[in-house]
Image (cartoon, rainbow, N blue to C red; front, side):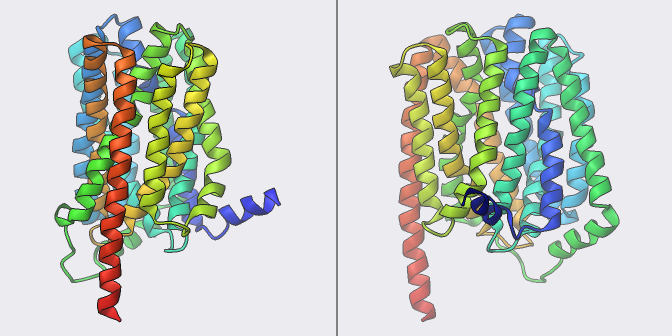
Length: 409
């Protein structure tokens, strides 16, 4: 019975979807700089918590610019070259970043690195959508998330160990896996076979495509997604410092929490999505997931300061993540065409990137002015607001869809 569930969850996906998954797995297996960057800045380079927050904020600014540029050039030139270029350049820049020691040099390079690295995301989302069908689009994105989180599980565990030995190793491993992923993309999906297909998608129609920036429903969706993402990013910015400074948990344990989350998603998400997809609207699942994520922050305030509470909070936030993020992706992809998908994906990426700016900025300021407990209450409240917003958007969307159906009939 269990094997049948897994077989159904993973069947029917295209070969190129699996190739993209493998490339993403290798890339994300080296993801260990960002989760430990705040600790590295404060504990090893002796920057203040505000300086560390500024550096994480610049990662976000770079991601915004990268998402915008990546979306534009993906729609113009196709998704293949953007992915390869972003992976290879990002790998080199990670290695260079590890050699920096001053606040100015690290801040500057963090922006440039993030800009190059995150141009990959709109192109990758466009590629996933292109190689999936309407029936398996959500599962195709979940497969990609599986690779991301399986990589997190490995990267988090190895990263925690490497951080306890030498933080500089994190930068070299992260950079090397970026470059390896880029080489794999070139080998598994040769440009001669892919680029024409990706450009064909761009040139498939002579009609002028609708702009993502004029889609009011999508813009409201992006706003509530931003609120949620700003809370979710505390997991990688302020929460590791909280566990280290307030609860005195080790880097290895913090890395183990990341690994726990990745392992849960690897084992559960595809089966969960396969059984949920089509039963409710994507925005309904999104709203529930966001509400669950918000409760994970409240747990940190109402339960004792101990390792078990940290584990429980991670389990809760991971369940919320699995309930929300795959359906966020399928909702936005459902509003696109081949000619404007990069633009929609770019705006989707920019939303997360802006949240990457807001998360450390707000988090560090709340901690400085009040305390960590105030931050967790605030994040819970914002998630509640975002969840309510997604439900309201669902009602508006459903009403418009019903009205459109009535006109057709």
